[in-house]
Image (cartoon, rainbow, N blue to C red; front, side, top):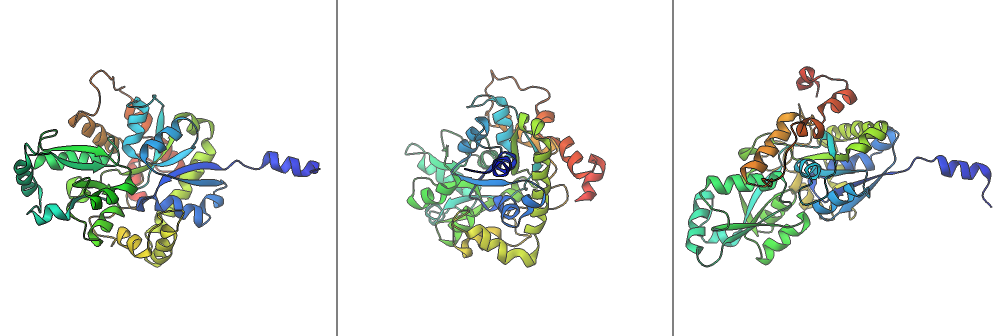
Length: 349
């Protein structure tokens, strides 16, 4: 029979926070914080859970199967609004990175003379009456959907006439491109670099050229989690800030590649992971740390909301609260956690 002291220890041991992630390069801060003991250093136990796609992440946050998650910045907004899901007030107090997306088109299109938006428009017109081009995005409510839609529109392609967009979980994008079921996609790494390496695709545009500095992934939590477990939430933020800085150190690169490549994380060869991290200044790869990168500022949320409106992603019947940005992108919590004001933050990181 267990002793009284054993039972007491079992009852008082801190419960592990369940943190979800998708197998993408920009999940690196969570993986590094976990593997390098940075969560433990901040006094929290974390159980990382790999999920297949963003709808799964969203639903598990809504139904409390996850306490926090690596998530699309746009997902915080769409979940709080209740678009294609029960409305659930969510927030972010920490942006995990910027940019890092690219548009990948199939090698078959390249062989037919496509090398940019204008030549893609010409190919779409040639196919008109036969079939529209099909492009994949990881979520209807994502920077990827906005970037792809903006790029296609700027090239003169018309939705539902020249192309249609389908949702494909990130790990399945390359597989579908390789199989020919989609003609291209907009995604984060390592899936663009992998397509180029395997000669299955090429990248005519990157998010750094289309929308420099746009928010990409964030740490997403329920609003009630942030309120009721404030100390643990802030501990997560501090650990992720330390991990993000570590991810950018040149001397840590080889260990970072090794960690991400592991079976329980990206489950890819080290060579592909290395390609997905890229060079620090390369336009196709995510910015994981730097001045203002982590601040969940209002302008980052507004870029997403404006993209939703531009592409008709918010139902006309759905009211958007005036305080949506203020309640979801919580720069106040960021400032309280890291001890900086908005005026100081530009030079503080």
